Image (cartoon, rainbow, N blue to C red; front, top):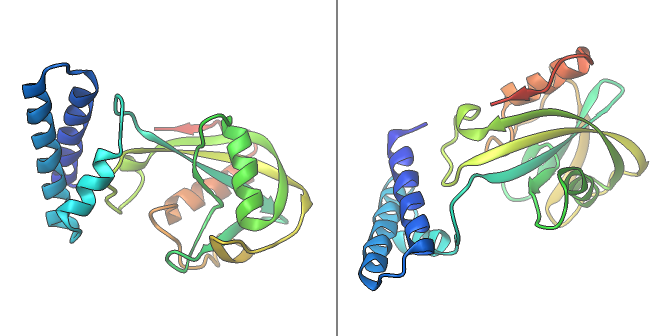
Length: 204
């Protein structure tokens, strides 16, 4: 991970926790200033405006923890289900942020249905990865990515408000990937799990 991002995240985490716990008006001013400093660092390296970044960071409340990103892993005849994201016209495993009130498997079922049209049944946890250790794309927040294998039990391919195409791909014929959502190394890991059904879950 880039050092500037590591520093900016740490400053943001300290400021967010401080704003959550402090009762002192002067400490609140200092923590708010730290949040502004974090935003300026991120803005300087990403090209975003500091005001935009502050707005995003200020929306984060409570004690800071990694965000959870669920990805549904669906194989059919040895090919992997991917959806084309309208946001960047690149392909990813169906999924997104875990929603409050839903379990990991319920989130996977929901995301796969919404983004691909398929009804699925979760069957196996394949991996829980720290995104900082498994991506080349710097991201503002720290994520844990959950990869949950599912079997199709109904429905059919259908695009959505978020996706423009649905397809199944072999490991050697992958389309351009949405790298903030999934990397080629992660996809290869999933194919290896398919080839080795007894392979243990991957973590970290």
